[in-house]
Length: 456
Image 1: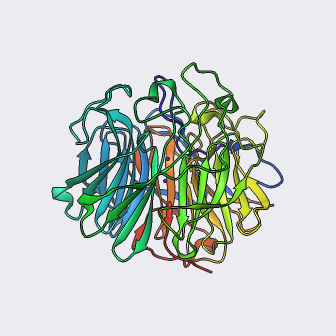
Image 2: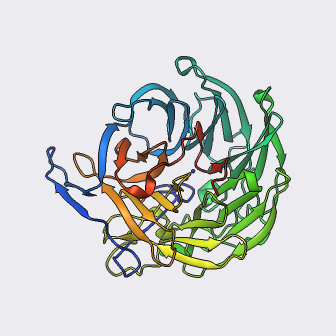
C-alpha cells in the first residue's frame, strides 16, 4: 500500500519504515553472512533461512512503488505505469505486460480484473498519454485511473476519476452487492503541489464509488473531513526544505472489511475508523505517540485485535537507522484495537547509514503468530515475529547488494513467498524457511491495504 508528496529534488513520503540498532527487544536471526559480489557491487547480506529465488529488473528508470496480487499475477506499480507479472512459478517470474501511463506515484490495487492506479502528479489530461503540468494549471488532472486487466495482452483504460489533491495512495473497500468504494489519501505538503483543487490544509479524504457492473461510471461520492487530525508540521521530519509546508490529511489507509474497521495513518496521528457506512467513515479512536514523526502506513493483525502503524521518520529522505538513532525513531508501533493501548515497537536490529526506514508491510495470514513482513528501503526486507509486541524478534532478512543495492519500497508476504518491489532493482522474490510461517493461508486476491478475511 505508499513518502511525502514528491518534492522538486527530494524524494516523497511514501510508506516508510526505519531501521534501528540491536536492542534487547530486537534480536537477529542466525546470520547467513555475506555472499561475495560477482558484479562489483556490495555483497548481499541476509539470514541463513532467507533465499533470493528470482529477480525481474525494472522496465525503465522510474521509481517502482506498490504491489497487488490476483490469481497468478502480481501487479507492480511504477511512476511511469504498471507491470503485470506472472508469478505462477515464483522461482521463474515473467513479465507479461507493461502499461506505460504517465503520472506518479503509481500505487496499485486490483479487484476482479479491475486495476486502480494512483496519480499524484498533475497531468495535462486523464489519459495515459498525458504529460506533467504545473499544479496551478486550472485544467490539470490527477486522481485515480481504472483499467481492465483481465487480458494482459489487451489492457484497457476505462475511467479516470479526478480527486482533490490527487491520489497519493488509495485503498479498496468492498461493500458487497456489486459495489466497491475507494478511499483516496492526499495532502498538500509542498508549495509546488498547491493548485485550484489542492489547498494547503487539505483536511479530507475522497471516497470514490465504483459500480462493478459499470466501472466507467465511477465517481467521487463524498469527501469526509479528517476529524481529529492535527496540522502536520514538516519540521518533525528533521530536514529543511523551502518547499515543505504544514498541512493536514491522511497518507495511507488500511481496511479490515469483516469488522468494518479502517486504520488511517494521517501524518500527525493514527486513527481507527468505523466504516460500516463506507461513504462516511467515523473516527473511533485517535492515537498520538509522541515518538512517531510521520504516521505513514498501517496493517491489522488478521484477527483484528491489534493494529501496527509505520513511522516514516525523516520522510524517507535521510538516514534514521544509524548507531546514534534511538530504537523508537522510524519504528513500527503496535496498538490494541479495542483500547488504543500502545503495546510495543520494532526496528531493524542492524545499523544502516542509508535511507532505511521501514516502509510498506503486511502480516502473514492464517497462522497462529503475528509475523510482519516489511520493506526497509536500503535495509532491504525484514521479517519479524511481533506476537509479543514488547519483545519483537527478527526471524529473517535479506538486503541485496549485487549488482544493484536494495532500496525497497514495498515487501509483502503472498501465498508462501515474499515479494519486494524495489525502487532500483525491480521485483525480487524470496523464500523464507521458518516454522512460524508454515501453513499460511492462500489468498486468491491480495491487496495488502484491503484485508478481506479474518483468521481468528
